[in-house]
Image 1 (spheres, rainbow, N blue to C red):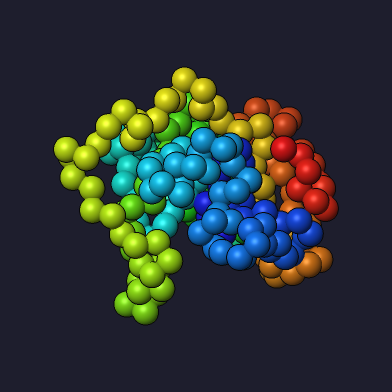
Image 2 (cartoon, helix red, strand yellow):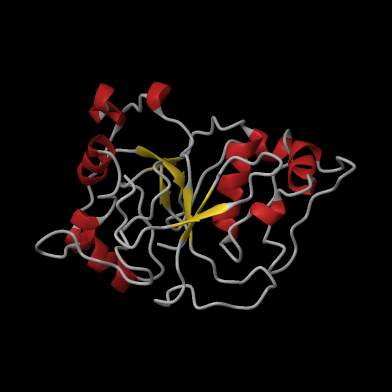
Length: 228
């Protein structure tokens, strides 16, 4: 909920009123309800355990193309509202340093978001809106055995081997684009004041994921998530 955004820019679960999760399925099942805000195709891939594109995601572990760090000098960072943001206007940290040092880039962050969401935003911008970030439902991690058992009971793990793969496992990237806007759950105000991210008074906003000078404006989310 905190880090993952679908390729639509929406949350994993719909928030029909600011601050609260509204169940969709009759059973209020967390698996069935997840990614119900996405396209039918991506939602089906989630339910089938097949990989699908997302804007951002970090379900316990992640793998990266190493060139992001070696060639473009990508780094983990926080926001200007909560700590170190890194970067160098002299380009000492390469393309990433020049990106985050550009006037207005950090100011258009979602205030107090996770460093795991910031790194996804930076990747999309480093790759000129052509990033490929994938959530793989069958790759599973948990912080403890009890959590693992709850997850395994809800969706039994499926062992995939190379011979099991077929064309359905491949993602057609031709129609995948950076979302128009991305939901922001702010945990800090612009002045750095801490906010209760899950409070009913903390209204979600939508941000432009692609930075251009002067585009750091936000739009309020409707009460009923009726924008799709």
